Amino acid sequence: MRVKNADPAAIVPPRVAVRTWVAIALFTAFALVPVLAGWLDDPFLLVTATRIVVFALAAMALDLILGYGAMVSFGHAAYLGIGAYAVAILSSYGITDLGLHLLAALVVSAIFAAITGGISLRTRGVYFIMITLAFGQMAYFFFVSLSGFGGDDGLTLRQRSTVFGQPLLENDLALFYIALGFLVALFGFSAALVRSRFGRVLTGTRENRIRMQAIGFSPFPYQLTAFVISGCMTSVAGVLLANQSEFVSPAFMNWHRSGELIVMVVLGGIGNLTGAIGGAIIALLLEDWLAVLTQHWRLFFGLFLVLVVLYAPGGMTGLIRRIMGRAP
Amino acid sequence: MSVPLLSARNLHKAYGALQVTDDLSLEIIEGELQAIIGPNGAGKTTLIAQLSGQLRPDSGQIAYEGRDITRLKMHERVRLGMARSFQITSILPGFTMLENVAMAVQARSGSSFRFFGSAARERALNEAAMAALAEVGLEDRAHRIAGPMSHGEHRQLEIAIALATKPRLLLLDEPLAGTGGEEAEHLVALFRRLKSRLTLVLIEHDMQAVFALADRISVLVYGRIIASGSPDEIRRDPAVRAAYLGEEVA
Image (tube, rainbow over all chains, first blue to last red):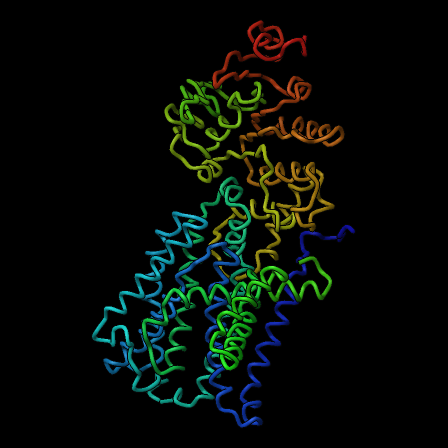
């Protein structure tokens, strides 16, 4: 069937809608979690939901470069750690303002991403994965060696970040909604980004790098910019994570964590932002649920992952597309 | 026409012990269609890769409008007005036909460091892309995903992408390869039209097309140009006939 239109230049291909609607549905469901927690009288539900929102944000940030830019960063937990330590270190000097914590996290992660990304992007494929892993581990061991801030053991926060001097985040409900607010806002930002001129260059480079060079683009500056944006967004998740757990440790930036972020993106389906959010929900709920059933939960989680990769290669996104009768 | 649009001087390129380009010199005159023919393995694609900046020669010089561009990368040469097509189809398979071409339009119109505003809604990009698609006869398939389209359509799309960069010089690497009767005729007619506005370098195995289109033909054998001249001169050249043409064009 041919698509015909009197003014083809004005047409926008209708490829955005479904995943945006799914995202809106997920956000609405998140917003209702506190109500549910009230009914069930289960305060732990809110804690779990906050963690999910925070990791959804990190996974979405990773999807921005992994899904749209084919840059598989295996060191993205470093940015979670940078965000978390921004809170811990500034707080230990008496600077408790959330805005300043965010600013420090963004600045440091932007610098770290610009340097490590600039080097990593000289390579591609498996080499890119390995070199980002190496930089992630360097960040990990750097914080392990910071004995003034707990070294290997990490340190407990005396208080959560303050907002205009007010201890607003001490309230779990407020923290949850602030985290959700960041997720929604940054989803909007990312969705706009991938549809913009910049996003097109990024996606085009994923599709065919040589082709992009042959029409006059140098991929490197675009890829590096995307890498930095992604790192900064992940560090926001780190700031929120520190506040949620009231504790930071180098374990936040361990390579396992980086792997978990990739797993979330793959579970949900790469390259559509919504999938990463769904992947974070599934991964963390499954982890909680399996951990209750057996201490060997990782084994079953791994089995689940293998099944998804084998039978639902597009992750949850692919599954939804197949159910809706469209090509995966 | 004192300065050729593109000239290569004493190019050398070797892969290990294999000399793929061997002291090759070449001049492309503005407004002409120059064909480069030669048997398989003569180094034609390697030559295009060096002219377009995908590969750097081991030694030698390439000049565009008299300016040394030997060290310029492919994307920098495109901005000077050089475009190319690929022997093996090179498109953005997940993009629509229109998006493929709009991407090329975007490359030469304003900054691509714009993080907001939908690129798909930019009329200027889409209209220029539509015009390029219409030029190759694909306007009615503009909104189909490029990947699953036919080989012939991919070939046409590649030309549209190249044209959308508004080149002065278009390097075509076996654009007819794998296309059948009607498709090939369609493309030959297109190249004939383009000849009046662009300088073209055509690498092609289809001798009928080459002799019909070319103003000048260079024959490449083992990385060297063994003859260069008008189609008639090439047809009569004994060295060419011995090395390549055989009795085919007798």
